Image (cartoon, rainbow, N blue to C red; front, top):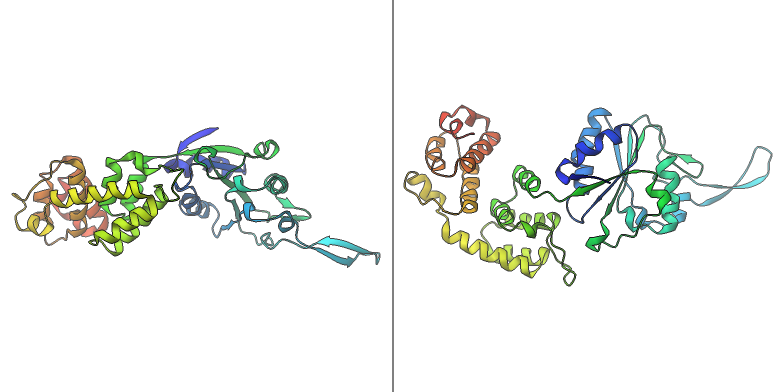
Length: 335
């Protein structure tokens, strides 16, 4: 099947989606497939079809009767009593809008439900009821090697769609989370321990994935200085091994980093960490502190860091505050 980095998923599947080929997205659990498809990708869909509607429908949680409605006895034109099937509620009426049906976790669906999906995916219908005229279908399923509980799709269903494997992307994840404002300490830790971005543990229900790591970030945003809360969140979301390593990292970081107040007071002599991931954390923190009134002071310190790290901080600050784009000292740092 076609492979792509998960950060490139939207642009990879767009041509196939546009020409109305059903797309099945395969990938490891927790790497962000659903988030991308329901967020970034749907933004692109709505640019092409304003008002497009996303329907998140899980075949794995349904029984065959849910796909056919329930029987209802009515009289036909000849007065004979006949049985018809009611329209399933998720098959909405045609309103002229584009309707995107996202069949999440299709790999968890039973074989009978996969059989029902034949008609849904290819003919865009369930029984006598058809999907709205403008419609597209996307499916997603976990790879079976990460023990996600997925079963193999039956061949006739596989052949009704194209297949794309979304692969883990460390660099793409880091850039994405930088833009979203994930705590720089957490980003620096993953840059240092890349294997911990996705590491299922067969003996522990808590293990690190991009999804579970983001949950730690929520705790760090709410309680940035509470080490107990942060470490407990790391253990609860990503397991003891991850939590212990992250705790050690944070303690080492605390001992190595200069305080922002020290940097601002003496930018030319304040301590510069030797470790690059420590420099990154300091620079990221500075990028949130810079104002147009003190930008020249911060720029003096940033100039002492590695050029790409200083450039990152200056660029992030300018993205946050348009007025900073007029500061020459910051512009000089951008490479």
